[in-house]
Image (cartoon, rainbow, N blue to C red; front, side):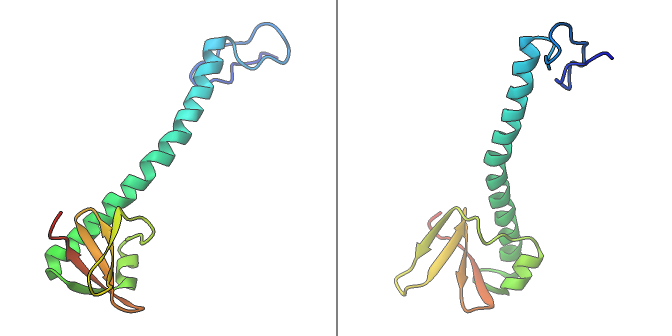
Length: 122
């Protein structure tokens, strides 16, 4: 039975020891570097993608309904908004809390409704 290299891009036959998994050191290190790169890429690229998607959703709502548009939380969830990821948060002088996604913000009005607006100083 002929054994093949475990590096998916190589697949050359393995010569030597019976417990050898890769045909050479370059294949071994390339395989592990590719696996590590995939794990790091997923971690660092997922959050900015979600934040950009949130920004696009808020921009569409702002352009469609105008500044200080009141929409339901269920509507935002239905069109794909993720309340967990935000770029920053603010508080106004009246104690209102804003979750911001780049230049757009959401102010929680009550349990079911939020207000979407554009930050003035951004």
